[in-house]
Image (cartoon, rainbow, N blue to C red):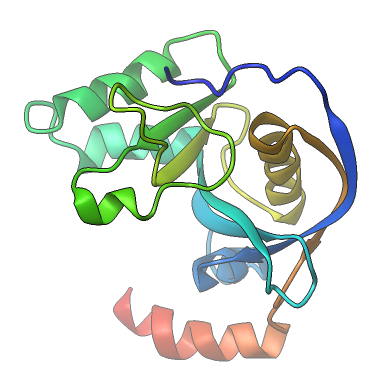
Length: 184
């Protein structure tokens, strides 16, 4: 099963807090390079980031197309390649790709929230939201994806999404100059 399914009763939550994992997102946000096409986010119930609700990756259409054209080997990664290709050719705007436990260690890292189980009755260890409606990610797009994710997997309608740990322009510029630009 590749979609979470419909849960009956929806409740509301005022605010969730999000941490965006990679600095590349902020490099694009401040226009040092192109905007990010995929990123990982962690969702918290509190602004101190002590109560993690979950995490997921957001992958845009352009990132999926890049994977097919330049990264994946169609023969060696046929299942994943076909999964992406099928989604891109479908009428769906959003799709969830799940990574399920591959060994006993992975079983300990299953998501704690609602998610589809596999044939072994395991929940995924990782969820990737694929979207054809976005070519790149900005703050607004991240917030909208979090709201969709919260409704799908937590059965919660979120009013407000607050981004945590937003680096300043100067911090981001310094990081870009030291950690990114030299490797271009």
